[in-house]
Amino acid sequence: MNTTTENNKLIAEFMGYGYQLSSYYIPKFGLYKSQYGGGIVWEDCFRAEELQYHKDWNWLMEVVEKIESLEIFDTDYFTFRIDGGLSAIVEDMYGNVIVDSVGLDCDSKIEYVYYVAVEFIKWYNKQKN
Image 1 (tube, one colour):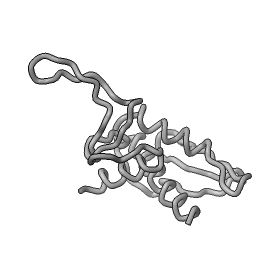
Image 2 (spheres, helix red, strand yellow):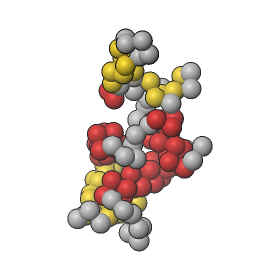
Image 3 (cartoon, one colour):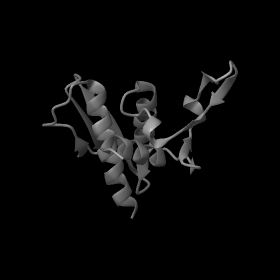
Image 4 (cartoon, one colour):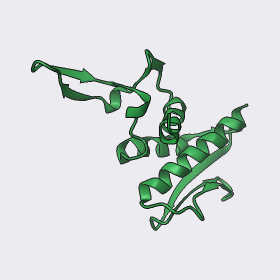
């Protein structure tokens, strides 16, 4: 599996989506797909390589909103900031930078936000242990 797939799995688990039968159940992003033979089926399970956090703002903004709703140690909260499309930063309530994309060379705003979300989740998981 490539790094994007591994990072998307990390995000899906952070978001609390269950992993069963080699796919993640994410009804919010399910869609209608044509089935062979003309039928239409509701598809709401995604294999790891089908997760869209790295390229779909709808998927990624859900992650940003969850990060901003987190509390650690009962008082600490986080702000996710996108600065002019050239960087993304997550700060704690005191303005301390937890993770940023400074020095990263990305081609798009979504890449910056995705990178910072992934790195924040890695940091957050370490805090819980």
